Amino acid sequence: MGINKRNEGAKVNSNINVTPMVDVMLVLLIIFMVITPMLNNKVNVDLPTADAAVVMEDANKEDAVVVAVTRDGKTFLGGDAVTVDDLGSKISAKLENKTNKEVFMRADIRANYGKVMDAVDGIRSAGVSQLGLLTEKRDNGQ
Image (cartoon, rainbow, N blue to C red; front, side, top):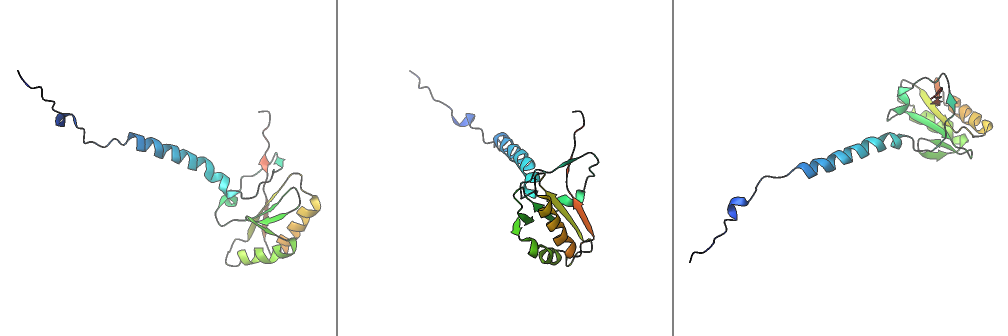
């Protein structure tokens, strides 16, 4: 009578299967690609729409100075809440070493006009040469 011997060593696969790792990395890449543009706008405002909107690429830069006025009249410099009285001094401190003194403003569509004008006055008191008002482009007929 013979003994049946199993040869398990011949079946061992020593190759590393990288397919699951690649799948996980692609999912993470897609998630980060979707989330990254949302991180730039720290303050949530509903921008007004305009027909003649011009694309302002400088507003998306990391070192861009962005002022936001919310629906309830609060003013933000970047992601930090500021008062309208301190706005001019804080903007001039941020623009101190820059040659391009440009500030971008994001005002909510339902913000009080007086609060927006107070913020514009604070920006102008900082010696800003260019003020960009950010809007959404109106989608005509689609």
